[in-house]
Image (tube, rainbow, N blue to C red; front, top):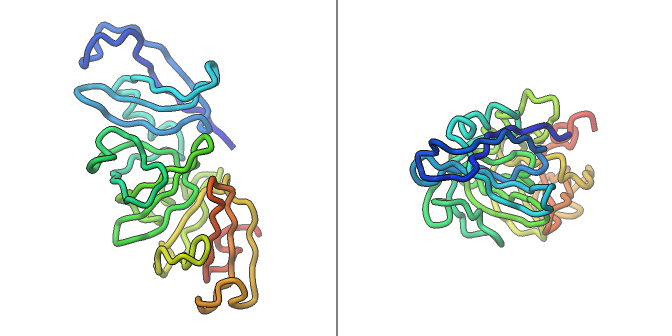
Length: 231
């Protein structure tokens, strides 16, 4: 279920100080929020799908409006990110594609985030039919903690991920912090009795199929009732 995101757009920007400009108050659905990031000087930006023009666009916003974004919805969080080199479309955010940068992302758009190292996850991020892939300096557990109290339940409980898509091993993370995904991408989930589909992994009990640009399939030793509460 979408919620509203509000920000103050700067019209007729006359410089990096963002003073003496015309301001416009805007509200969009979380479904239309792509990400937000800092530029040079005082410039702050938000990328989103603008339904009024039927296209994605970038808006310059005030620093206060940018800082408030993570407080306006339980699904927005600021992360430190770097390109992991695994993606079809690495996140085209200023300062991120060549080095490490900080930006605000929408956890509802996380089709999957999986643990790759201590304090680090690879993220596949779906927006407007495209799949972006990058690394963030957060574990799946830390991403989940941002929204764990959110009634929308936009992310699954963190679970141990074994395989993902066509038996390709991406991580052997164990414990509760291995993987999270957004429920909006959940296509189907099932419990299997043994190693029927993933014979190389002992005690595989759950498979999760996601509706993403590349149709991800997750396999886990965690019971499906723990991944999708109420199943």
